[in-house]
Amino acid sequence: MATAFALSACSSGGNDNNQSACGNASTRYANPANITENAASYGSIDEESANVEALPASVYPKGSPVDMWGKLKVDTNAAGVRCLCSEKGEPVQLRGMSSHGMQWPGVATLTEANIKSLRNDWNSNIFRIAVYVDEEGGYAYNPTHRSRFVENLVKWTAENGMYLLIDWHVLTPGNPLSPIYRNRPESGKDLAADFFTYCSRRYKNQKHILYEVCNEPNGVNFENEKHDGKMYPEYWNPRVTWNENIKPHCEAMLKIIRANDPDVVVICGTPHWSQRPQDVIGNEPKDEAGKPYDNLMYTFHFYSASHNDGRHIETDVKFWDVNFMQFFKEGCDSVPCILKNLPIFVTEWGTTDAGGWKNFSPELSDMWMKIFSGDNDGKQVVSWCNWNFSSEGGACAALKWNDGNLDPFDKNILTESGEYVFKELHK
Ligand code: IDC
Image (cartoon, rainbow, N blue to C red; front, side, top):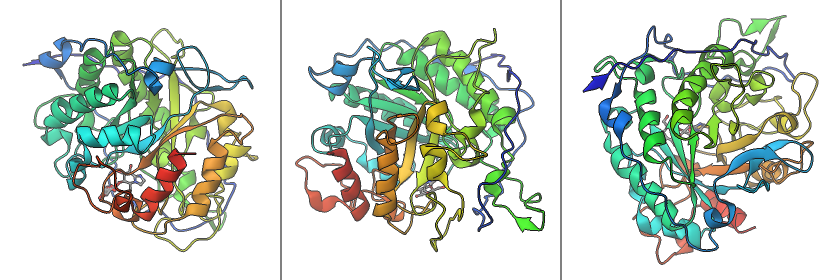
């Protein structure tokens, strides 16, 4: 039975920063024509979610990451810059793998043995579970993604003393306010509100959980691409914007999450496939009383062959002349140093092209790893999850095959990307 649950899309003013280009034209990202209107009104949530019983607090193995660091929070580093910190307030770095979509064969890697191996053999301290929603039999069509996979992963990561990032994988459509997420045509359900109501109640006693409320909001204005006789990449002109679409979604989810779990770390997606955290600077989510939320982070996603220092690499998805590395390391005229201004969590990155299929780029990945180890004007150490822990999706996959049993661990299962990340996790 569904309960009416009014959720207003509250937004607290401010403007998106229409930054001018630090770079020039290049090829556009192939845009799936996926812009849908904002939901006119939001749907309902299930009684079951509103009343779900909380799991008792987990006990973490002695000396494990969660045992040592406890419930994470956002605090400041020695340079006074906000970043991810332990319960005691010391900066920490989480590093690990992201799952592939549970609706695809990638799901076969989500086993108890593999999580154990990701802790003991891979030396990772976080796992990210990507809950795709509407794509090819995602969560909207298969609630077992929540009741079975998310639930099992909450338990298995706890047993291994690892953190778990639960990711609402907004991708297609790219507007998190779309009825596809917020008011399902077939049921009138607000799937996003329902999901976060359930999770934040069910897992409120778990110190090892973090939430990512929208993976990669996207949608661009191609029609305005040409001006001044020059072509600018659509990167400078997102149509699904922080102010109009993403911030209202984050505020609605935060209202739900905070009512059940007042201080859990929540990570917000950013415009243009989570490549524009700069749009958030000076315009962070606030509660209904106008108070900025604590313990919030913002994400940046990069795929090394596509998003780098703007060099010209011939590959499927390219942002030639957009110097992403500079934005993070020190900033430029139009983009202030992002790592000085916002607490960032790279919840997804790949060693390849953004399509995932080709151009494994270890040198460019090294450059990013260096920036994220604290070599930036904010001295911020940045946590990350690598895409992806499966044998699916091309060269970005970490595994050559996938039998769900990495125990005992055999290094031959690693692809060249898997080998790169495996080594990185041991540094
Ligand atoms: C890719 C999967 C691929 C699948 C596709 C669907 O690897 O198998 O067919 O999604 O759209 C992202 C997304 C992530 C993408 C990944 C690689 O968050 O869902 O996975 N990517 O393209 N952003 C940039 C790259």
